[in-house]
Image (cartoon, rainbow, N blue to C red):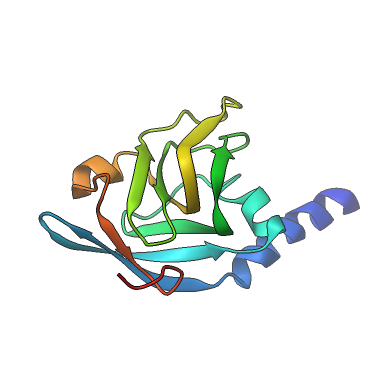
Length: 144
């Protein structure tokens, strides 16, 4: 029982100290605003959105990998479908993996070198008109 309580505390504490920041994507239909939780450390990136059962429509998680490189993600222990938006260092969207399969260990590839991945609730990219080439505005990306 003590081990269960300890594990539960470990799951809750990181969320309580999470950093949230604004992020905007400039689409052909205008700006789309989100509030994103930052995943900047190896531990934050490893956990990601695992074990969560919901994600607000204007929320997401931004994974900062520091430098451009090919990125490989998966959905292990992730209970909700996600859209994964792969972003180059200049802030341009390189690719989008839509409605990824919950709990899958299948590899989801960036399709090239990217600096970051934005995870959104499944279906958000299509519903909000996000597209390859759109500009992501956030302090993580160099200005144009």
